[in-house]
Image 1 (tube, rainbow, N blue to C red):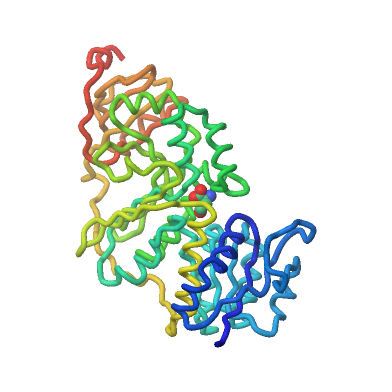
Image 2 (cartoon, helix red, strand yellow; image 1 turned 120 degrees about the vertical axis):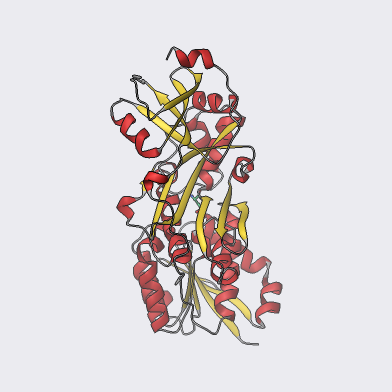
Length: 411
Ligand code: HSE
């Protein structure tokens, strides 16, 4: 029986998860592919560290040694940072290897180039693990929704942020304690700034945008906010209204162009995101034939990520045709800004209330915390005249209980 030879770059949480899964699911992989998969080499950082791998596996700190192996079919990459990863993967493609990556930052920056290079070299790129951990959202968009016209994607795309928000709400833990726990569980990036400031979700959103719409918005036009402005007090205020904070990326086509935002929002019980807790991720895909689909599952961690990579391994080894990413047609013109309906918002901070007919003050929820109704552009204008104010959109139609009508009148 012929053998598929694989190298793994990186032996952290993800790399080790992939190695262990290839061993534990060897029978299933062989049955599906009709060939054995063998890990031949692993790129590591520290040769002294003890690792539980078979003795015949080459452990090296030098990528050149891996490239020189007599047979190498697939390179599975599980390291962080854009470089040297991008360079390694270009070399692997040049050598004729399929590549599989979990590196969203690198892929958001250079995915297009890698896919082009792969096409030229007649190999494939698997990148399911770059978005939403173990949820097969990329294959769903790429393989299973080829004819549907996607109009909107909304997703909880960062497991660490969702975990922190859940811990803060359920266990009343501080932000710092919750982040520490996420790091201990192996969910957070090496530098968790990427998680809690929304960069990680932003990169994932850009990758999804390219698949769903065939293009990305101008990165500088994308509103990106993390979860660091959400306090336990704000969460309690939201809970009184039956709302929960979720960190949501949204990508849509409006007026012929792709727009995106990555930020915390509030959702009510009727929204599928309300029940997405802990390290779970979820993705809502709105499209014209099927309507709304929600995919939900573990968004980070050793085995969910390994699952996405192993499925990609089978995909690249089975496929005989080269993939073509997103060439979807425009499907929704969207509404011009002037026609956009007013939305509900939770606004918090030292608000100097001035007569502003564009803002309707609905309720006072806690000290310095109000529910208002306004169009986004009017709210943005109002906030510019205030200092230290944060605001969060309340997604969809929710029944807001009126708590303090009297208090509103004396704001
Ligand atoms: N740090 C990432 C997260 C890992 O928490 O979602 C998975 O991409």
